[in-house]
Structure formats: C-alpha cells, structure tokens
Image (cartoon, rainbow, N blue to C red; front, side, top):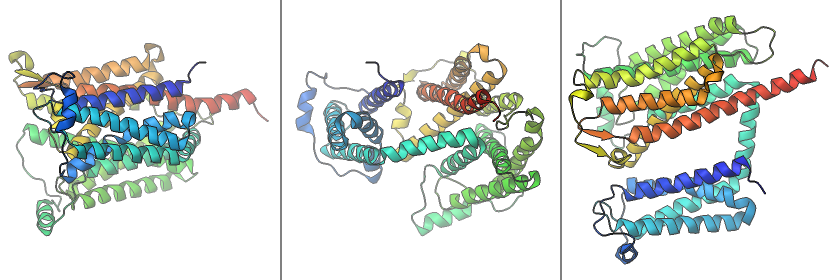
Length: 447
C-alpha cells in the first residue's frame, strides 16, 4: 500500500521539526561530559526554576509545530483522543531527553519547568489540530477555490496581513508612560528632509524603506486587480487601492508609536502611498497590454514585471551588505571562526529571534517565488525551481561572504534554503491550481 504524497510530506515535515528542536536545544554544543554515556544522569540534575516571561513563551511556542504535525498524522489512524495523548507523550519524552542533555552543556540549564512548558505547547497544538483540523482543511480548500476564481483578492488579503505583522514585529509594545513619551519624542512628524551622512546604517535604513515601498507597490497592484475582479470601474479600482494602501500605511506607522523598537515617520506614509499609486498604475496599464482579451482567465502579471521585481529584491538584499563591507572586501581578510548555524539567533531574546528568522524566511521565500514565476513565464525549459533555488543560494552566499568578518555565520543560508524550496513548491501548486479549471472548461467547450 503506497503512501500518499501528503502523508510523505507530513512525515518529512515532522522529521525536520524534530531535528530542528534537537539542534536548537543543544546549541552551542559545549559538552563538559560525553553524552549519552553520562547524559542519563542529567535527569537527576533537573530542577524546578522560575523562568522569565520571554523564556516561558519561547518554550511553549517552539513545540507547537511538533504537536500539530504529530496530531494531524496520528488522528486518522488512532482517533482524536489517542492522537492528542500520544502526541503529548512524544513531545514530553523528547523534551525530557533534551533537557537531560542540556545538563551536560556549560551554556544551558535544564529544568523540569522547561519540560512542563514544552509539554504544554505540544498538548495545546495537538488539541487545536484535532479539534480544528476539519475547519483548517475546509479553509485551505476554500482558499484554493478562491485562488482559481479571484486570485488577486486572495493575494491582496494575504499580503496585507503579512505587511501588518512584519511592520509591528517583534511586538514590543510600550508598557509604561516613560516608554510612551520616549516613543513620541523619537517620532518624525514633518516632511522636512534631514541631512545625514552616508554610512552602512543609513544605507540599510534606506534599503528597508525602499523594501517596504516595494511591498506596497505590489499591494497596490493586487488591490487594483481585486477591485476589477469585482467588476468595478478602472477609476474606482484605482481610488479603492489608493484608499486601502493609505489606511494600511497610516495604521502601521500609527501603531509603531506604541512600540519600543520602531520609530514613527510621516515620510514613510507618503513614500508608501506613492508606491501604491505606481503599483495601481502598473495594474491598469501594463497588465492590460499583456492580457489576452480572448481568455477568460484572470489577467496575468507580465513576465518583465516579475523579472524587474526579482532584480529589485536582489538589489535590496545585497546593496546594504556591500556598503557595510565597504572597500574591505573578503579576499583582503580572513575570518577568525565559523559560527554554528542559528547561533546568532539563539543569543537574541525570543521575540527578536523569531522576528529576525521570519524576516529572513519571508525575504528569501518571496525572492524565490518571484524568480520561479518569472522563469516559468519566460523560459520554463530551464527548470524554474532549480534556477530560483540557485539564485537564492547565490544571494544568501554573497551576503554571508560580504559580511564574513570577523566570523562566518551560516544562519541565513540555513533559513533561506528551506524557504526557497517551500516557495517554489507553493508557486507550482498555485500555478497548477489556476490552470486546471481553465483546462477543464476548455475541454468541455461551449454549452
């Protein structure tokens, strides 16, 4: 009896999640006694400790993917209740083994508290996956139908949510009056240009602003087509896209006033509004020229625009790193050491580490998705997934080489490669999902 592709993918996902938990729990691998010969005795070294709020949330969240994956895989074979119990037991056993091994690490502290929090995260995720599994599957099927009929509306909704979450990460909202006053004092309320010196920090800030504007241009493009999907007039579609883009930009900047790590800047709102207008203009004129009027499929994004977006994303990634390197290029220097992958994230607080990891995954995932779609439109014989993956690895490797001083950090590569693989599979799935209904309609012919 052969296993379905979905089951194989779920098993692979569960394996990767487990390996990630093992790797992350044993960083930085500074064992002072050899496991597993003496690791079993670490069980007797575990103590109950009082964790900080950051550590508690991190211990709960990191085991949620494992609990959900295990419960989904076991639900059909063992039933809902047994799946939840067995998933929780597996999570507890894995956590207990890893916490015992942590007593052999100089930089880690194993505790029963972490085991309990890991088990809590596993059981919560398993229970949610079992109870809400049918609803999640129904929502995914509805999203697929939405993609085949109104893809731009779905894309605009997803991008709006992603931009909002990214703009507020790491969600460090102010908790005192002093922090609120400091946030308002840092805000830039006017449009007056400020003279600044060219430095790696200012270039990185400019690249971040340009990257945010690029996302709003794409959002304006999607919002305009979403309005035209609803049979609105072109001018009304343009006005709707401008209004929604402005409201989103103002909402993000306004909420950043109540965070500690962001600075309100009214010029960013104006820049993103211009980007939305450019994206809407592209939707009204560039796409209409490339669309086949005899086709009943949704208008396609021009391949030239996809290639342009891929090049802009590549430049936004590489330019700040190149400016930071300056004239001190890598072949003029030698790195002192190689940092274990994800070690730099482990040294950060939990919310900041998750925010930085999601930033890398989203940036390289979108780059691979855009490149894969562009290659599929222009030269499908070149294997779009391989070309997009090669581009992603090249860009990530270039950033590592340019910033490899005094150490080499492979965290970006470790996060970028799976993000590119997932993005290419998603692009292929969405392309086939759009193609199937129109192929079936063509085979049936006119009624």
